[in-house]
Length: 206
Image (cartoon, rainbow, N blue to C red; front, side, top):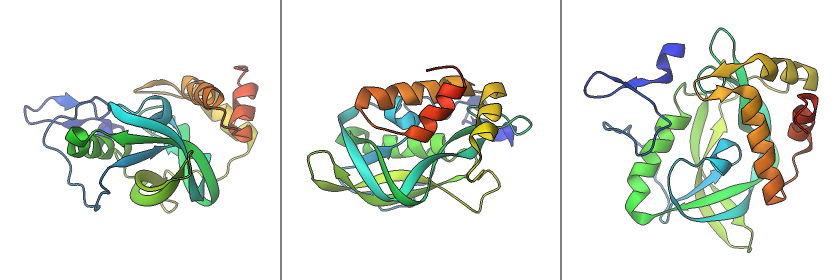
C-alpha cells in the first residue's frame, strides 16, 4: 500500500496529498458539507491544518475519543514497518480544535482534506455536531477511524505503542516527532490527554 501514498497528477508526476493547495483533479466530496465549513482536528490537523483557517477555536466532539489506534502506512510508517497515528474511535468525547474554513477556500479545503486523510481509506469522513469553547454548537467535517479496516490497530498497550513509535518513520518524518508535536500542541492549548502524554514520556520526550 506504500505505493498509494502519492497519487498521479495530470502530468503523470507523483503528487504529495499533504501539500496545499491540492492539485487537480480533486477527489469527489460525497458528503453534504455544512456552510460555513468547520473542520474538527484531534491530531496533526490541530497543529498543521494545511490550509489557512479563518478562525480556530477549542471544541469538543461527543461520541468519539482520541487514541493511537491507526497503523500508519504512509505519513509516519510504511506497510512493512507501520507507525501509529491518532484516530477517533467510538465512545466518550474528544477535546480538540475546530478550524473555520474561509468561504473562498471551501471546496479546495475539502478536496485537500480528502486527499490527505483518506490516502489509504482507513478514515471515514463524517459531519458531526461539535461544541465550541464559547458554547456555540456547529457542524464540522472530521475523519473517524474505520474500525473494520485492516489498519485499525485498536487499543494497544503502552509498551506496544511505544515500541512501534520508536522505530517507525514515514513520508512526513519520524513517528516520535508526530507524538511529540501533538503533545506540545495539546499542552499549549491546555487540553489533557493522559495516555498520549504517557507514551510521550516513555519515549523520553517529557
